Amino acid sequence: MEYLHASLILHSAGKKITEKAVTDVLTAAGVTPDKNRIKGLVAALADVNIGDALKSAAVMPAVVSAAAPAATLAAAPAAAAPAPEPEEEEEEEESGLSSLFG
Image (cartoon, rainbow, N blue to C red; front, side, top):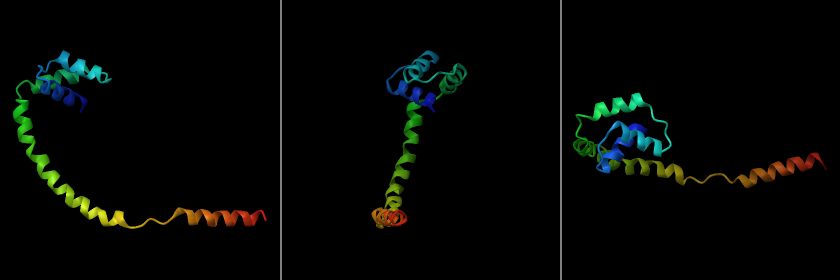
């Protein structure tokens, strides 16, 4: 995933996606770059218009985010249930232990 993110950072910055550039981004991020993976990524992205790919992919998250509030509302009643107070349990344990030692 880091390799793809590095290429997206380069695209966003308006830089050419080359093996050296991807290696530099990964190194700056503290990732030990794998030359074979970088070579494959650069070759795979050579014929891809990243701008067009991002525009067509941007439609999918918009649909997913519209469904997210419904899931949040469904989870809200479960979160509203009061949790038992742990203090009562601690008091019971203390009285049980104190009875052992008089």
